[in-house]
Length: 70
Image (cartoon, rainbow, N blue to C red; front, side):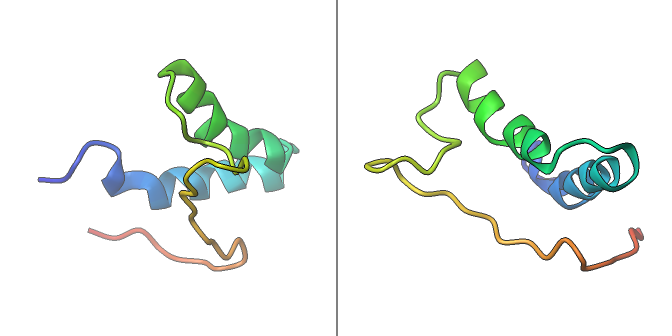
């Protein structure tokens, strides 16, 4: 068992990058969709890098490739 949502972030973000590359979705829209927008919906003090807020970062390599397996 895994915590809901955490087990699929790697594939979720990869699919989002596919929309950026193939469908022309602006990368900034993808980032907002998975950071700022959920924080606003749930009224959480996260999802931004404003002065005085706690940082919650994820560093990615958008050029890295992987294959999903069992």
